[in-house]
Length: 422
Ligand code: UD1
Image 1 (cartoon, rainbow, N blue to C red):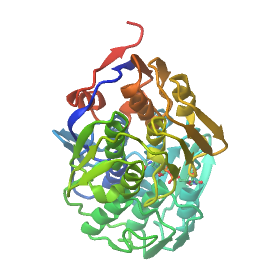
Image 2: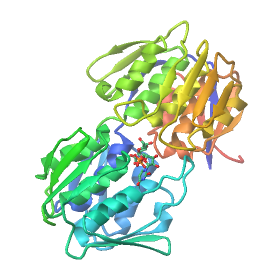
Image 3: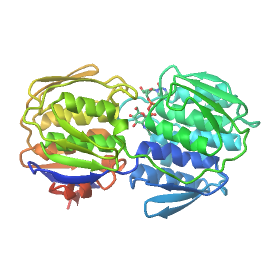
Image 4: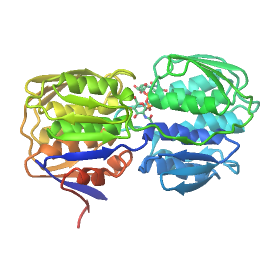
């Protein structure tokens, strides 16, 4: 197992190029199951979750050919329809194959994902919506067994909660269903928008893209001709590096980004006193003398993303005063708090709300990554800690951050990847 050794107190300076979005890539790779052609995907991030999903598709009989910055996926020879536990347990987003496999083959088995570090994360809304579309769903021996021998039928689906992968799953199922599907209370995340746009470019009629009501006219199991596309930039990676500039009081530029997707994050950085130069595809953050405290509530897009909550908590430890962060999406997404406290942060928790009493002097020590975004908060804290911080269990970081240590080294951070026990 690898860990990162990070030397604190180095000033950052330079430019970081943002990679393609992990959370856009995952549904778009699953979408290739709906294609009759080989699909070329560009600007794919090199992260473990993407490799896991491509391995799952390969296990099902698809062929994946890697390019310099992407992949060609050919699912024409796909024949298996069972996503087994060994893969699903490593990545919950494997559930994204359920809708497309069921829509194409009329049957599918996916292992139930099980628990998760940040909360229960049920998938009941995915299953309920597929049942409404005519699927028969049974849970047997830890597997979801879904059948729809005559295909899925369009219908009206009202999501009780906004679900990102749930919306993506049903959009993909609806693309091959018979007739019109209306999804009410759909997710509006840019990653869902790109999925809809690519399906639209592949000939699927979709109305309401980017709104809470999507109308999709299915092709009645006729496979799609999907044109080449390039993954949108990762807004969470971008936000994380903006926080790296902010916390280390450095001038840092991020390029290959989409500032329009970062509205809530930019607004909070400005509220905290940072000045940002925003261009069409780049953002430069400037250091500020005094960081102001902040109030954050995580919500669905376009509000403040839960995937940036941990990073802002690390940043809030450097604010002069009391910051309040309320987590509304996941019940257990404060695992980074105890590790930040071990580094010297003054944070108290009350239910879903964290109170950060800044400003704190942080000290380097051994800390443990617990989930993807919690890990990046520890890396941010390490940038300004006195001495060295060893961040263990970085397989969490590798799931979603492309070339993290290389990108940090390029802007002046002393960081190395080492093997445990050596
Ligand atoms: C996606 C993102 C993840 C992000 C999250 C919220 C991917 C691969 N992952 O996760 O990074 O943190 O959105 O922005 O895109 N829920 C149910 N029943 C369901 C589905 C969801 O109750 O069937 C609840 C969840 O427990 C959670 C909320 O709905 O409280 C939102 O979850 P959801 O949007 O589905 O998250 P993911 O799609 O898993």
